[in-house]
Image (cartoon, rainbow over all chains, first blue to last red; front, side):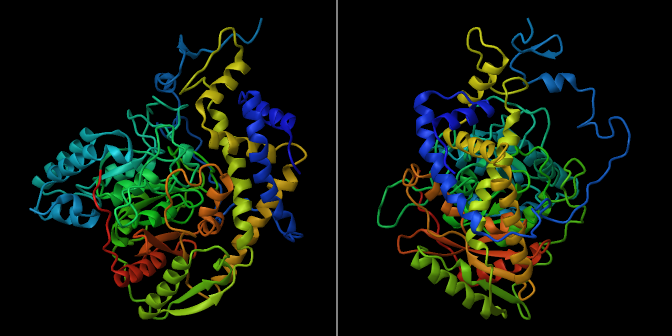
Length: 100
Length: 494
């Protein structure tokens, strides 16, 4: 499968990356080079093979059902959470207006 | 007094503990070496005060007769992929420029708790995507190594942990942290004549490490000897409830368990790693490696890893897919860069911010990842790649029925000049052809310097072990190290 400029533009839009015409045109052969190359995976006989979900056998743990069990990842850290925000106002993240 | 910057982790730790020199003297010596080495561009920010404060704390503990910790008095370089509280953490990207985390990554905290201090944050390929350290927003890292015969071409230190490899090889840091997603510890270690180990997936917590491909990312140490790697890995590893994939296992005493005696061990040589286009001198060093391990008492056996050829293309689906998802968090809202064109709405702000904040290679991988995960293509690409990954992993499991560890080259070539492979993403990806299979299978793997080639550039050998058998990997590495007698070092030009 190969991609054309319109497809790359659609992918870029899905990925929320603004790209001008020139950049899109440059990306087309680059992406096609990579996609042509990964295409060889189609040769591999995979019937009956499960796709990998965990690389090392492990089980998902449940944590104690306690509020703020770990103060590093618990709540009550609004100042810390907002400290690096480009626009924090009144204790919230500021964004451009999204509703009229 | 000996030049303290020639010392590694073990010698510094033991020298400080024994009172031969103070931790402060060590930190001052390395701070000065870092300040002199700006030409390497190995550091994005330097933190001499952090190193001095940790050193003073160690010296104070010693005065009181307290335990100094596994890394007591050792200043290290921290790859700028680890969140460090109050110290800029960028992943070498523009989008995170100026980001000062309010928290400390588990691995870096473990190191500080073990008595280490920080010389600075090391440059890398942007978001750890690259194999030459040419994708950093903060400029290329230049290897301290140059070709012999007075050449002055700038060489690549490898990537993505290129600041780490350059700093350790140049002796401006005794050791550094690295992270390895598809070879990012081992390939730069090989390029610069140092050691580096990626442990079993889950040994080191990923909490606070800027995420690239979460099912592959693992932190590990980079240092000049196998012993130093063992010591530092002990300090870095350990169960962390904040990482859902952290292994709930005790950290073995790897340093105490070191032994270069391989009697009774079988070392596998995978025939599929003998690929067209591999440098003759690399193949020769591989042969030499077999001899060394045989001399250490091991039996050399042939093994087969039939899906080797497909590991790299599978990686270049899985890793970009995970990256496209992980990097969705950079949206100009919560931290980092915001680009808000006049009159722009929220969607325009996202797109403008990400366009301005990501470099070309990062964008390329996000697009590939977005494409292979998109409706209609998911099964053909992503599911197929994850099936191939199962087969790659199964190959290793079968090989380990016949051997205890695997010996292979780390890279298909020695270091190359900066700029040489920049225009061809695929040529660059091939650097990791020998490193990626172990990553896909989550296995511990290490690169150890073997020799220098006819250009005077280092070549590394790679050992891949069974899951959780870092000890076996380190021991085989030690057997190579004690026979290779690798003493070459870059001549100072910076």
